Image (cartoon, rainbow, N blue to C red):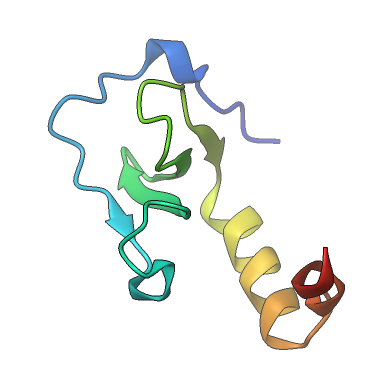
Length: 77
């Protein structure tokens, strides 16, 4: 089992965040980045909040589930 770093231990200065072009520029979207082999997912409206940290295999499982429609119910939330 991989022990992920605590988000507060990460140096987030200089992290290059990506925000979906589908957010419409309103900032109502999550932002993602990669640092030290981990995927960071943060709140674009609250950039001072610490991001969630995921392993590449966790993100892969999530993305494959999204592509398979497993999370389509979230579109109606």
